[in-house]
Each structure stands twice: as structure tokens, then as C-alpha cells.
Image 1 (tube, helix red, strand yellow):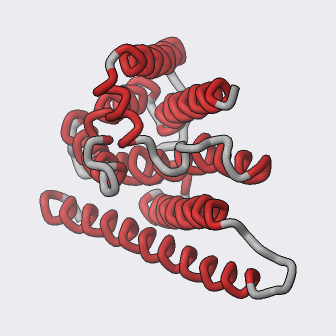
Image 2 (cartoon, rainbow, N blue to C red; image 1 turned 180 degrees about the vertical axis):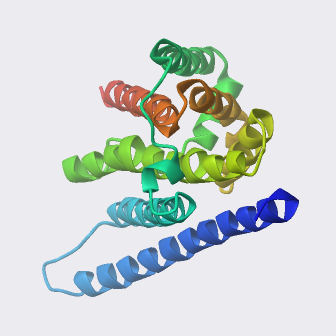
Length: 250
């Protein structure tokens, strides 16, 4: 199916998987909540409310990202006629120097934003308001929770989002004849809106990332390029949050 009709059905399919992700996250949070209530009824066993919140956020986020990853893998196999890598755009990175440069650009952008936020109180408050729950209070919850947070933000989230948006969806749009600008827009806009559901202001902060990820996807020739930049971005953000948490406790 080609043309406008094919693109419409493709985007509806994307939305259906995102809705499934939210339903999965809600179900996981509900099951966890019931489990924690039952565990807290055991004599001598108690989980503090703050830990409950942190664990619930992580489990719900992991369920959502896992659903996106499942959707990407299934749709990628279908789009590639059984060849999942082809359907996802998994190819060796070309123009590695340009992709590495884009990784550096993301690091510089984050550093510049942190420095500006430190100097401008209003920007600092904005940064706090748009920081995801998975990143805020990075030192809370003990070593296991900290490791799980890092794994979610640095590994699972970039992998699922890139394979879903700039993997399967990007490839499907390109096969329908859409150019780079249209493809970049149709993959970046839902990604941005998804991240702005709980904090619309976060969209403004993430627009540069959306642009750079799309450029990496185009210049690198495959989803591995944008995935590399995405991982670099998230790992840098986690490192900065960890440093801030460390100095904040001193």
C-alpha cells in the first residue's frame, strides 16, 4: 500500500502501539501496586512510600518501552518480508566521523544547558520541572534501583525508541517515497509529543535532540547511527545527574 492512504494507516499503526504501551505501563503499575500492598501486610516487612513511587515509575516505564520494542521488532519483521534487520534499517554505520561529531554536539548541548541553568535561576527551575521521574533523585532507592534506572535510561529507552521511530517507522516512510524532511518530521513529532505528555515544556528542550537524531539517522545510513547518538545523549544526562546528586549530598 503506497501513497497518502498507506502513510495514514502506517501512522495509525504507530499510534496503536503507543496506546498499547500506555496500557501495558498502567497494567504493570497496577499489578506492582497490588503486590506491594500484599507484601506490606506481611509482619516485619515494609517498603517506604518513596521507594514505592520510584519502583512503580521504573516498572511502568520499562513496560512502556518494552511494548515499543516489541512493536518495532514485529513491525520490522513484517516490513522487511521476514528480514527484521532490513525492516528496521539495521545497517553498518557509514560516515562514522559525522556520526561521532553529532555525538559531540549532543554532549556540548547538554553541557551548555547545564551551565546556563546554573547561571539563570528561571532556566534552572525550568530544567527541574522537565526532568523525567526516571532521572530525578537519581541517588534514591539504593544500588539496585540506581542500576535499574541507568539501564532503563541509557539502554532500554534509546533502543526501543530508535528501533520504533527511526528504525521501523523511518524505513516504512522512506519505502513509501517520503523524503528526508517529511520522514524526519513524521518520526520526530510523535517522539517529542510522547516525551511531553507529563511536561509539555520538555518538548522545547528536546527539539535539538530530535533534529540531531534525525541527522544521525540520515548521515549514518541506518538506525545504529541514531541509536549511538541517543545512547550518548542519555548516558551524558545520567552522568550529569549523578554528579549533581553526589555533590548535592556533600
